[in-house]
Amino acid sequence: MRRILIFAYGLLAYAIGMASLLYLAGWIAGVGVPRPLDGAPSLPWGQALAIDLGLLTLFAVQHSGMARPAFKRRWTRIVPAVAERSTFVLFSGLALIGFFVFWQPIGGSVWSVETPALRALIWGLYGLGWGILVGSTFLLNHFDLFGLRQVWLQLRGRSYTALEFDMPLLYRYLRHPLYLGMLILLWSAPTMSLIHLIFALGASAYILVAIQLEERDLASAHPEYTDYRRRVPMLIPRRRRAERIAESPAAAD
Image (cartoon, rainbow, N blue to C red):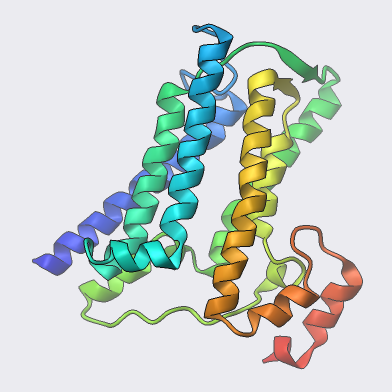
């Protein structure tokens, strides 16, 4: 029964995480959601800005804090180790839901592209950003990243084995394609409101900090990551270096 309950918990966490990401796509674009990022202001701008900055800070602390190995060691004294990743996904999804419920627009326009062809191009980049983000999760191991592999293995009575270090496809050209996808979608806005700009700046700053923290943990967990970091660019691929990686003996292994 315990295995079934943990598996059901993992499924629920995955469903909430995926639903929040799907809603996020519409929330940022202002499509198909009742309260988008760029909505009509309802509070004085100072109060609204304080709420929004608080939401950004809360998400950053939750997302990066729960991902750190030291926190995981303490956290798994409370939750089963196989459910640790599912719990991270659940809390991340709930943090995103906090944006959808409490976010406060403040009005104002930074830019607005009126040319239909250019607007279509920018929306295409927005879709590309999401495609890179989602595709990157499958290049690694989507179901491990979102906790399903862990709870599925325990349901079958099998021990969890951590994924080995790998450089699949895009990861041979840049170290963080997932974060690159995030940056592209954050800034691909044919109409950029002031609050959208603040959201994009805050999220971009968080991404750059999160990369440093994540790479420190990866270097500790995978000795080969230090050499990989030296040879492969972080976010912007450079063809010559990527070709050397693809042709190197380590990559061939």
